[in-house]
Length: 394
Ligand code: FAS
Ligand code: PHB
Image (spheres, rainbow, N blue to C red):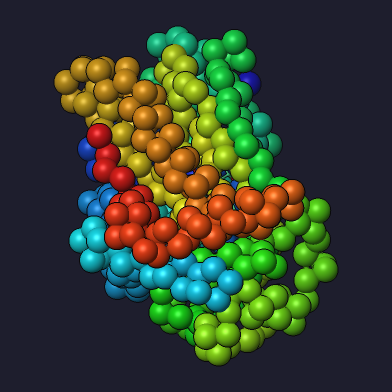
């Protein structure tokens, strides 16, 4: 015997995509229920993205979630590319008139959950065996188990916001969906430390020993990454080894300001480019990592999820306001047009900045030539800047 719930939109996943969708729908009087596999503590403990595009800051502010972000976030006017010790600054503000906001995804998620719960949102943390059924009917159902009991959500729409390892994408029939993927031959080893950042802006470095990224969460908390092997094990990386490797890769000038300290988080993430087409199947709509993955080199994963949700919420609100389903009908095509451009930028930055184990001497010359061209051409720098601050939404 299942407990039956009714809502307008059943959202699977309480990451940034699911939470922002729930907030935007709520702000327009549309009901939703969120089903989340993990506990609230697990969701709020994830260390993920760090950079918000100008458009994402706008979306979060309009949704009513931006207050702490605007107070604690760091607005950045530019970032740095480094190649074997040579540096070139991409002047985001000078080249595009826009900035990016450095504010961790962990904080965004905490702010979103706090606001939704304060508004009485229904978020089932610890929902197991979530399964959307009859998504091509006018009354999809989402089945799940919670605290040992069976439940069903009767809804009009299902939003698959359950990330790369979720259940939603596979609900799009095999015969209907097409996937595109590139897996990179390396991963990122990331650490978090309560030390002042090495620089007031981000540094993306390509060094013959491998890629490194210097980022931050605040002026007292740093986030660093080094490229590592896909077979690497976190046990092989003492803090001392990490700091030595980072020091070697970012060049003497930057390393002079590097403050070492104990890691408070250390993890290895694989890198892949991935897209699933289409992002709609009947009344199931995919958004965020459920539909696509980008290598974090372009700081796009979280921002793409936010962009999908801006399109999906606009389409659902229009449907409920006027019955006009046009934006729902072109949701997938509209998202994918922008997604592929962002996939390109993330792939481009990854190809330029990493050491590829099988790359020829010619390939390494091409990487250096790309850097030298960017450093010598305002046009080339502007192309990177306009992608980094975020391409416009159609
Ligand atoms: P999410 O994966 O964030 O959220 C999906 C939610 O669905 C999760 O809470 C999950 O528990 C839940 N879920 C999954 N399966 C379910 C099921 N069957 N039933 C119910 N719930 C289910 N992006 C950047 O821009 N910069 C970065 O540095 C960066 N680093 C990353 C590091 C790692 C290890 C990972 C995995 C991703 C990283 N990303 C980064 C990308 C990341 O930020 C994502 O783009 C972002 O979390 C996307 O948000 P969502 O689409 O909401 O997916
Ligand atoms: C981060 O701060 O975690 C971060 C910043 C920029 C990236 C990737 C990760 O491109």
